[in-house]
Image (tube, rainbow, N blue to C red; front, side, top):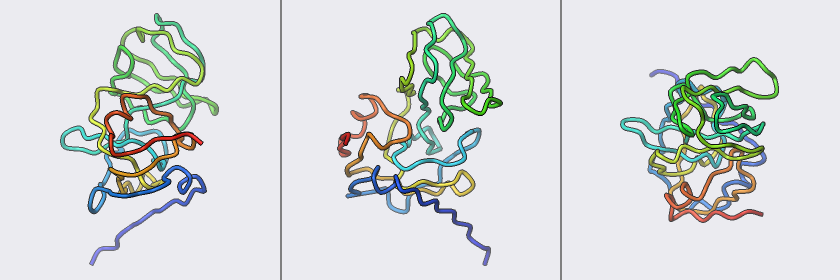
Length: 176
């Protein structure tokens, strides 16, 4: 029988993010993490279904304000953006990770709308299906996915917007 590799990462925030898990997708899901720069998928990360894969929602937090006419935006490390993702008005063509403090994300066209410091950028076009229960390494992306319960939004690594919350009507989001 082949060896089964499991990599659970315990973060103190996991229990703070997921306040109450009432229901999940039976057996969880193996996430498609190809192209992801982050080394782990944090508890509380929204999961989307894009036929045939379950993936972390394309999201990140802006580090530096940028005008609507630019093609490059600086994001804090730990984002879930990948080359090929559609964000803002364009498609990501490159992600430069050489700086220790941020990643520079370049799109194929001007971003179309100005962004400000600490703004959450989320791909609203994806079908959100649940929330990751516990932090998982991208080397073992088999994750529990909550579909009904309570999430402490203030403890999430990447903030989400109202459209994501609306797509998850059985999950109560609060900030504490």
